[in-house]
Length: 294
Image 1: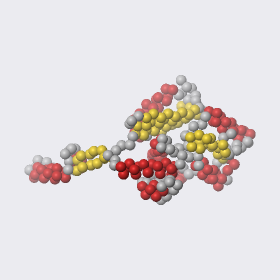
Image 2 (image 1 turned 90 degrees about the horizontal axis):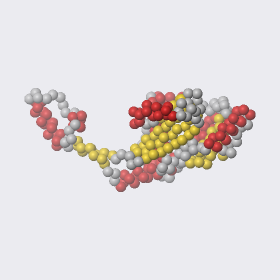
Image 3 (image 1 turned 180 degrees about the vertical axis):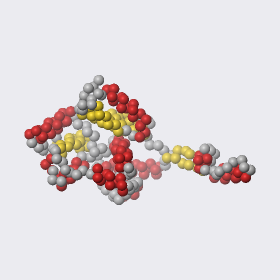
Image 4 (image 1 turned 45 degrees about the vertical axis):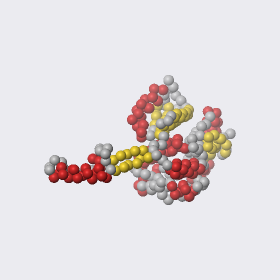
């Protein structure tokens, strides 16, 4: 049994029904502190997942992320048999006149009658497939570092985080109603076809209060990014650097990068080199240089 650990691992498995991705990262801690992120569809087995980790890990701050991406489900077509419904209503009216039944016919009643409503899978036509392909290509180009293989994992992980934000904020804290997408390769198609949402005012205010970095960085922070990170694009660190600079704490922030594709795919040696730089910075005042991790 592992008594203490510092590490990172990721694994993806897929079949004809779904793709499951599991990411685990940990640092040393006096006790086992497990933070689990999983989709709502797996809530019924959350206890089993926690028990599984506890059987193998007794100490450490552990972050376990599980994403589940089902194969795209087809749309549906609903056919309503109006002739049957009219005949049924006439029969019920006669029964009410004779005092045999009471009440009115409801949609719930019709759903229980297979003769009234038929629901079947809708097969996508060529135009549907073409539009989906164009939208996917535009979204990939707009996102930048994600590719066709990594985008489902990016969406699944982001969805888990977004649901957590909605729960904490008490509503939808984000929106794209006023966002104009650019640099996608087909901005007109993307802006015309993307679904729009508007943030709830109260939830947006909560996010602005608790999730907006102040830039008041009072301790040294060395950020290391993969240049091909599809989940957390490295360019986002530059935005944070500007926030820190405006707050007057630029001396406490250094950004470095490694030439890898993926999310936090650092080698043990790279982690050790970055940590040594941070220790020298804190203990000896030797501030690391920005740029590629030496």
